[in-house]
Length: 130
Image (cartoon, rainbow, N blue to C red; front, side, top):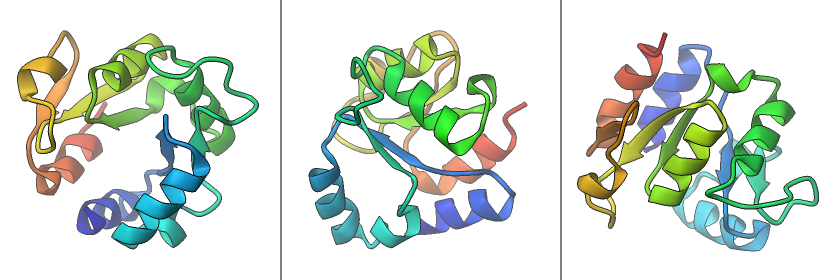
């Protein structure tokens, strides 16, 4: 995961985390993976006051895009849940479904969704995004 993020950021692409989880939960999970400091200041939650409705509504992703200053149409969303994919599509963002977790590829697939199984493939997919 960290190498994928390195490659994406080295290509000049802004990154953030936008999750349905609370900030407390994300601090725990991102801390365990060693990614908390990397995303500090760019972590957004469905519990943020500016987010009216969580996934599958687009509010969280639109909030994150606004905060990092990137138009929704230029955003790629990496998701491992059908609700997250639906939120990305509703926000007008490009969805990528990570099937290397617990959700099978068939539940993430759909029109305009690129499904991938290995984080090693992510940089090439996102950097090639038009």
